[in-house]
Length: 285
Image 1: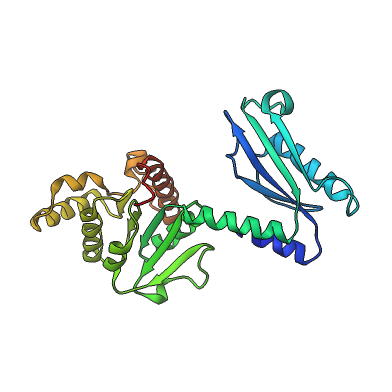
Image 2: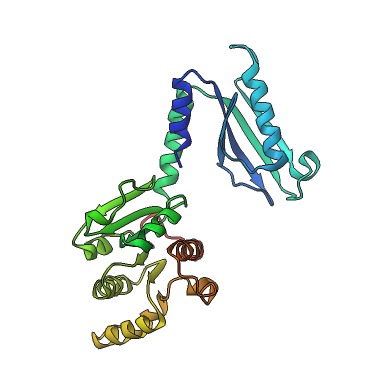
């Protein structure tokens, strides 16, 4: 999905006025968090501040602002909405929306906010560009992650890489494990069991992974545990390994459905849960 700043720049460049709506405050149970935003043009919208009656009120207000002649009306307004009484929504929380007529300064400010949000996202290293890896990249790309997609086989990557995904062709995957930030996640599904084992060993030896997943069956896990133990590694670290992937979330396969897209959907949810549960890291790492 394109960043809102890029979409807004395109709209303004074509002479299409727009209003940026931002959740300025979110208290209690609300459909979106503070900082969430959307764009409203005369005939189009992008993004969301929560949908339902809340969003309908916001869009209608924005379009009234757009209908004003240049120089008329305020350039910015606030909507203070208790969700129950004002919108008929049962969330019960309280939302303050900021609506601003967009210009080039809005684009720059929005791009800066998006950059800061992206920089704060957790990092996930996805090893392997085979059929499951491609499905996994497609499922993970829209999520709030910094996704690094690695394989030594350049020809295995699709011609079009999902937006926001960083493609890395490398014959030295262990170097990337070593260079990853503290609290990163790792998803290992290469074309080689031996390579899977080497990467997973390096991940477990770091000891700081928010998620360490290796594709394979229960039998593959047993083989890996024996191999890991034979190398004299700490058996306690194996408790941090998710293999088969998806097992930590649902405890079993979905009626034996092993299509890559199904596996990817389950694992994407599992990864998000793992990152949500990770301890917050200090700014010093």
